[in-house]
Image 1: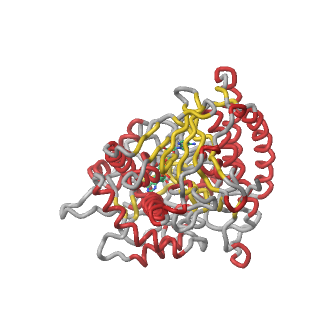
Image 2 (image 1 turned 90 degrees about the vertical axis):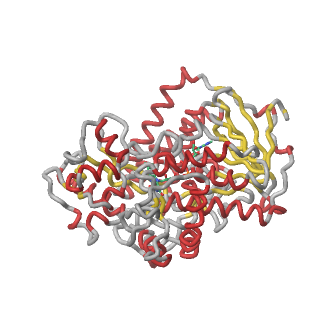
Image 3 (image 1 turned 180 degrees about the vertical axis):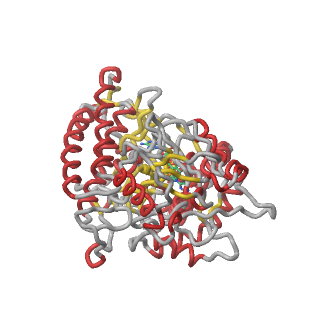
Length: 536
Ligand SMILES: Cc1cc2nc3c(=O)[nH]c(=O)nc-3n(C[C@H](O)[C@H](O)[C@H](O)COP(=O)(O)OP(=O)(O)OC[C@H]3O[C@@H](n4cnc5c(N)ncnc54)[C@H](O)[C@@H]3O)c2cc1C
């Protein structure tokens, strides 16, 4: 259908993003209605595709739900919501079995049961994995299964610009999105009874990150601009061990490697984690990242080492084929050489605030996966809980929409923007250098001033610098020019701004937020989320 010269596509559900969160929801929803799924690049380009370690899940008869809940709460440093964590843990096994039904093949032991791995912060072996390529296995199984669902239409190379909201005040509800087709350089309007934001994380806000290029914070930015509640953005998890490659792209050395016995060492080969935590190399991620940061700052070294040489050649190659191959490509043989590693931005614990059904503060808008803040992670995520969170809460969002279908009627097309509001494609050759410059500046400011160890002076400095960049970007946006790079930059700038504002709000150190201005935890005043809402 064409309205005001715009193509309008109507469906029951609109899904934005093709990682685990979006695909799981789409697969389930396809049996209840029509689904349009938009994704800004090729369908498999997602953080999901890069996940190595696995999915935390209680499947061993000697393991217990209580133990997984307690480990999660402990990592979350007082800010996890216990009832939400219980849902995660108890509903996890059924969803892992569902993945197997959809064709995911996880590594099994000789008895045919899952080969459960162990990771930092977990008190039992409970990580279901497909060697060290778990995310790729899951993503491909989901995409394969989706191909048979005639009710789902996937649109690649379409980037959501803006959420469409109908009604005023308490009647406001999300009814779709404006989307830019980057191949055909045109805007398409999607209308739906409900919208799922499944846009993933925002690691690209930082100069060093384990996240692929798609992780630019689009979901959080779009939701914030529509007045949706955003929470806990200060809690950015820095993965302690990404491969140190001063020449360019890095890759992750999974936590599972330390789970199997790897040891962190200084450049003069001394093991150092015992000094920082009783669990030494198996301490929670934030402790390990800060310990490495501390060792590097004290010694001036550009990296530390991760040593697996004692684990045996066959075991290393068999258990970590992907990591071994990546290291070899960079001239390091992990069976003989120690691996140079540094911390890098990895995961956003905060995001769009949701209830136990994945619904946000805007009726009709759901958020699941890394873009969401469900209350599972609190101030720090326990390793391998994020794929599980996406699985469980995407199913719950679907369940909520099934149970209360009457609350989500089809929207009226009166919401479609008028012709005078139309966009035009940006002259990319002319503006590319300015966009690249702004992007670089945001990432460097965030790395230098809003990293692993923070203080208020640097945070304020970051805020001022970001304000200038944001103003420049807003001028482009106001001119209604469009390109994928510009939209991503707009989102990165918004996400960076939200991280800095939240970090300035929290006047204590807790979990992943460590500030020398307030180095202690302050339970009396700060045992709650930091929530940001834009007045509109
Ligand atoms: C290297 C690495 C290793 C990891 N290992 C593990 C692990 O072992 N276990 C674990 O539990 N977690 C792990 N994680 C975290 C986990 O992979 C992610 O949290 C999870 O995959 C997020 O899934 P998602 O569906 O929310 O987002 P993603 O998988 O990132 O998918 C987001 C999708 O949204 C699309 N998108 C974004 N913005 C827009 C827009 N504006 N318009 C249209 N489309 C858009 C993207 O193109 C993408 O398709 C790892 C992460 C990384 C980076």
